[in-house]
Image 1 (tube, rainbow, N blue to C red):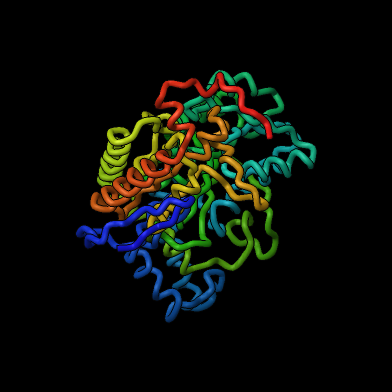
Image 2 (cartoon, rainbow, N blue to C red):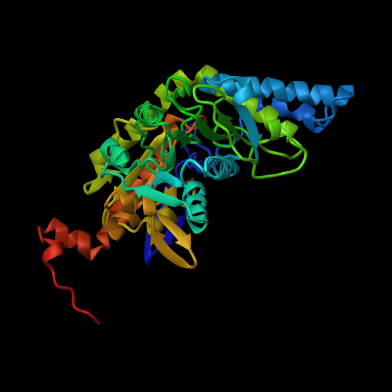
Length: 425
């Protein structure tokens, strides 16, 4: 038997053997990154050894073999999102794709206008890029989200001006799993002659994405969120109706039709292609399985604990995402109590201070509730036995932590905490 010391409280862990299907530590942080699928690694291995050519070397067999592998991967990526292979640009990942899309469009269409619209809950790769453009004289509107994490289409319409050249709204949120009305946003943008970019990192490979049907002009994606390798991604750029042009951000060599120079990462690109093909083939069944696991996990918490609630709209939601607040419990303390489980808390550690997540704050949550939030990211390799182990452990730790919480005790006694005047020391 082992014990965990937590805020002076010792929580005893059972010495009973682990259930079948459970191996510690358990990984449930699949929005941060995913483990590589063995089938993806198998596809990549030849390109680390025998097939080592430069895809830009077009005068011998070594280069031709590498180029063929890249062409195949381009087809695999395109097929997953309903694009054509000529519309796929390979990058080092979604952060570069977002930078290339937003800066490249801003620069290319500068004479048409200087106004960009995004939302407050975007990934930092979009927010920081927009802040950089503001310093260069562009105007950026940051749409607030509603309490469920969705933007208001009325707000988007009202924000558009004749100077608007780009709308960048993420497909699905990395923290709360909320899926935006992408097709509706794209339709509005096309009616107004505005380019629509979406950060599709969390959506591609998990839910159906069709860039034609959804009126998406530019889309960022990455391999490591869909069981592929890190350090490789892609940008979809529409070629017709409308044809989107992007100013390159990296110069030298004119690779990727001049939009992104640099020797191609052939093994990584092969891995991205394989990951996309597997995701496309298994998406429907896998989404159903993950949704069932997520709903089972949610129900276990709601049946065993009071003062828990889900963050984000559950109707428009990623299959494997569950972001829950365990009120009257400090999220970091909860994580310490489940140190053999990988999940994320609703706090971000920046410059030695613990700040609540800006995404959760944007939903209108107070600091205390945001700090009590945990993001569960279920993935391809999680199973029901793991969900049982993790939920039972969290329920156990939450109950113990609340036993020490004077606030929880007061609430249980019916005291309205909002009416208490706290003495200052």
